[in-house]
Image 1 (tube, rainbow, N blue to C red):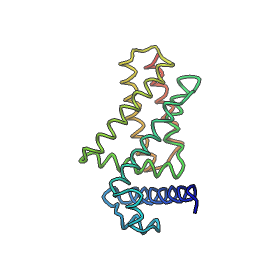
Image 2 (image 1 turned 135 degrees about the vertical axis):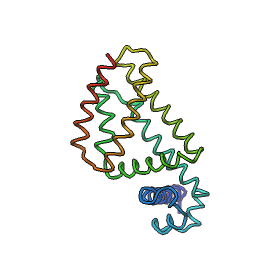
Image 3 (image 1 turned 60 degrees about the horizontal axis):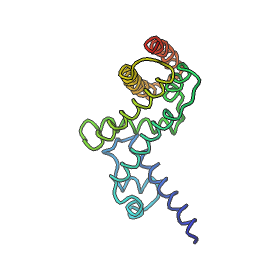
Image 4 (image 1 turned 180 degrees about the horizontal axis):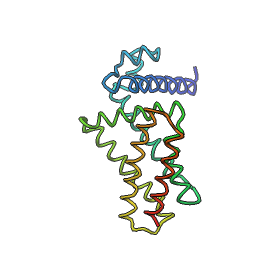
Length: 194
């Protein structure tokens, strides 16, 4: 077996472990995650899980970091022509989710719950919240001449609103209603950013 093929197979195994773990977390919460359940769902031995990740905590860390990077990167790189386009882009990141993205959102909301009593994950989440606020504020500064402090506060409002939309989308998946409500929200933010 060539080195490249072993690397490819190793990456595929890691992906299977992560996918199985995310499914378990979305259905049972973080507390439901165990090496045995990951092994059963992914069809991979427990020893293979520990070979690739070292521990279930490391699996959690990788999932958490991947989801948080997945959230921040598109916001930082968005190149929309105007404020309205950017704000609708943010909303679509919630009410236009694929099934795989819904799974990630469900896992993220489980992490939110865990953050209430786990300081390590709370620190990760708060760090990412700050990164998101700064990324949104940077984008808003392209379209608004408001002071940075105000842009940061509006960005925090947007983050809090997105969190609520995500929860409601998972509960009802009513993208038509959420889009209508988001449109009203966009009008409000545009008036705040004039």
